Amino acid sequence: MTPQQRQQALQRLKAFKGDRYVFGLGCFDRLGPLAVRFGRRATVVASGVGKAWAGDLRARATGALAAAGVELTGPVLAGARPNSPREDVFALAASLKAARPDVVVAIGGGSVIDAAKAAAAMACLDDLHPDIEAYFGVGQVGAMLEASGRTPAPLVAVQLAASSAAHLTKYANITDLATAQKKLIVDEAVVPPAALFDYASTMTMPRDFTADGALDGLSHCLEVFYGAKGAALDQVRPVATLGIELIVNAVGPACADGTDRGAREALGLGTDLGGQAIMIGGTNGAHLTSFSLVDLMSHGRACAVMNPYYTVLFAPAVQPQLRDVASILRSAGCLKQATDGLHGRDLGLAVAEGLLALSRAIGLPTRLADVEGFGDGHIRRALAAAKNPQLDSKLRNMPVPMSAETVDDIMGAVLEAARTGDFSVIPTLETHA
Image (cartoon, rainbow, N blue to C red):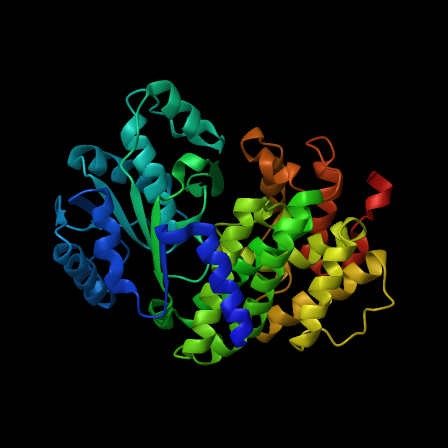
């Protein structure tokens, strides 16, 4: 990361969130002054409760709160399991409803923060809307809050992983473990009013978690960049391209040496820019498919597998974006092929190969067939989910014409390509225009 890139990222994130966001290397102890803005009684929800690795982190958090005059409503509550199972949301909502805190402090990765977002809303509304299905989709939570005249306890999100940027966004991904299907809340009402991310805390992330998280952030930048049009494309281009550049160049060094502070800061800044990107536009193909692969692999890894194949599908519609991405991948050594003379599908194929090379370099799979447990049932589940109106935002964000009626043909071909690694089965945009 160059000094210029670092400065640009800092400026963009400060403009994005202002003093509501504390971030950088070594800022964790600023949690107290951030939380006390919202009151002096806090319920703390944290990952790793009962585990030795998280003991020092909890002590630092409670110490920082106490120093600012914030008292806890009770013991630190255990955060959600991976992928934010709905059962964990229900349990947390019940605890928050009983505690009636002035502020909720959620400390963890995306799953912990997403569950806290949903739980804070449910704690406020569950007597009126006890079925969590009512919360999924775009704007449902905000509409219910407005109709009720109620306001949930404010959430201070403390991020520990360079990945989802859940601490900055309007998204909460919640999983039904019985069906292995993830669903999505998309609502300004669940954006945390304040957040903190000490990038130094990511230095304990294991190698695989580092790779998965980085590719999740990359997917946010890439998918929004692909899907944006007109003024939105002009707005997101500098955010997305800087985020992609930071992540692509830092993920290898961070995986090789977890204590590389420069790489960790670059990944933190890059994935945060991914969060800014998804507040400008929306993700699409890879994210939508990943929601049906939760029983196989992490969200970031699923997105990393799928993005090269969606890149080929989208190629005719996203030529300017592909030229930017190709330049970044080539500078990072992931793309050996010259792309100046390539157009249309050929340019998409070249960028897809560059994305595959990045995944290989950090040990991620490049085909669904290489993922243990993958089968036809996952393709059927993904196609069915794409037709669910609750996930319609992802379908509408596609940069190619697609509807519930064309999902089986178009997305089905992309999934088959991702299974085998054969790009040739992916249709071109013109055949469905």
